[in-house]
Length: 126
Image (tube, rainbow, N blue to C red):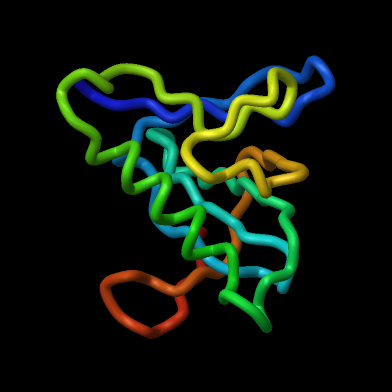
């Protein structure tokens, strides 16, 4: 069964979900934000920005924590198939240790430059 990840920005906004295999990268953006890029079936790219505390001088950037929790959800055993709540700010639901996420912004159909996982060159998504 395919796994889907669910995100909600809070304030009664519509939730966002994606198939786990659509996630292309999780990257640090600033010391207090991490972005996740999601490829959609129509070729467009969605961008989710997680706002969190700045831990870069103590334990390292939170990007690693976010990526680990998402990978954990994707690789979870057979009883965790279907929809997984990752960050739901409206209902205060956080996967694993993600309660440090204080805000979430979802941008649909964005075309940002990103670093390809397959190589280290930059690619523009057109």
